[in-house]
Length: 168
Image (cartoon, rainbow, N blue to C red; front, side, top):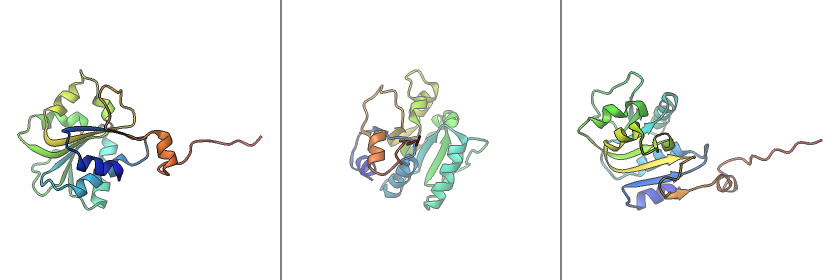
């Protein structure tokens, strides 16, 4: 909730949130979309096909109408759609569109973080109001706007403790 409010109440064009695996970065994206006052299609860029399908199912559970770009899917229209989930490898197609998205979310952003990344070049050509990069393992090229450490997540009850006790 803290990082959802931080994004919605801030105004930088690009923000970077680092959170440990398993704390629910996808749900942070969905909450931001649900609370958004921007009347536009939002974009989620995901590096993996399976994760993209998982997001599609979760967005439906959240009552958010979404469609997929990639893995053989290319929507004919975005009319009536709240979210376009795009597999990173298909970002090149979006970079050529004359379309401005509301929010652009880059999940697992460390995969495109290298400055010479061709995928990042395409992603940067996709117009939007604001964007949010999320990762558990940024390379620290850019400053972070929000950081939750693994210990913070455990102490906050977001993750189970990783300590293992073996009786001998």
